[in-house]
Image (cartoon, rainbow, N blue to C red):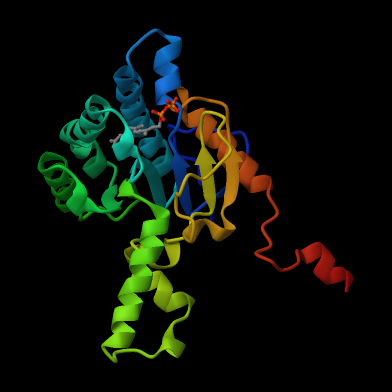
Amino acid sequence: MALFKPKPNVSVANAQLKIPDHIAIIMDGNGRWAKRRLMPRAAGHKTGMNTVKKIATAASDLGVKVLTLYAFSTENWSRPNDEVNFLMQLPVDFFSEFVPDLIKNNIRVQIIGNIDGLPQSTRKAVQNAIVQTAQGSGMILNFALNYGGQIEIVEATKKLAQQVADGKISPDDINGDLFSQALQTASLGELAAPDLMIRTSGELRLSNFMPYQAAYAELYFTNVLWPDFTADDLLQAVTAFTLRDRRFGGLNDKYESES
Ligand code: FPP
C-alpha cells in the first residue's frame, strides 16, 4: 500500500489517502442501468465497457498496482446466446479502441480465467493486447474472463495432486505459498490478494470472485450501477478503505501498546 501522490488529473482533498495495491471490482448493474432507460441490456454492457476505460485510467493515475475486473464469470454462459455473444465481442472492441491509451499510460494487460474456453476472436484480441502491452511497467489491468473461483481452486488442487502423484513434491510440501503458485493469479506474486474488493449495484455477495485471494480483502459495496461508476466513486471507495483498520487477525497498535 502506498500513500497517495496526487497527479494533475486527479482531485483529492486528502493527501494521506492510502492507495490499495490491488483493487478488484465486481462490475454489476449493467442490465438494470439499461432497463431504467428502456434500453436493451447490451446498451448497459456497452456503457459499462466505457466505464472500464475511465476507471482503469483513474486507478492507474491513483497509483494502484493491480486492477482486477470481473468481466465474465463461468456462470455467465447461462445467459441468452445474444447477450453472451455481445459480451464476448466487448473485449475485441475494447482492445481495438483502447490499447494505444493503455500503452501510453504504461498499463499492462493480464487475464485470469479459462482463456481456452473463449471464442477464437475474443481469445485473439486478449492475447494480442497482452503482447502489445507487455512492456508496460505501471498498473496491471487484470481481466477475469471466463473466471470462476471455485473451479480455480479445484484446478489448483488437481495440479498439486498430480505433482504429488508424480513424486515431484510430498503432501507436506503443500503450503500457502505453493497453493498460491498453483492459482491463476500466480504471476501476480505478492500482489495476488486484493486489498480492496468493490461491488457495484447494491448486491451484497462475492459471486465466486477470487474466494481464495480475497480472504482478507476489505469489502466495499455501493448502490451505484457500474455504467454510472466514476473516478469520484472510486476515490470514495479508496477513502473508505483508508479509514478501515486492517488487522489480518492480529491486534492494532492501540491494543498492542496497552498490553
Ligand atoms: C454484470 O451486470 C455485468 C456483466 C456480467 C458484464 C460486465 C462487463 C462489462 C462491464 C464490460 C466488460 C468490458 C471489457 C472490456 C471486457 P449484469 O448484466 O448482471 O447487470 P444486472 O444485474 O443489472 O442485470
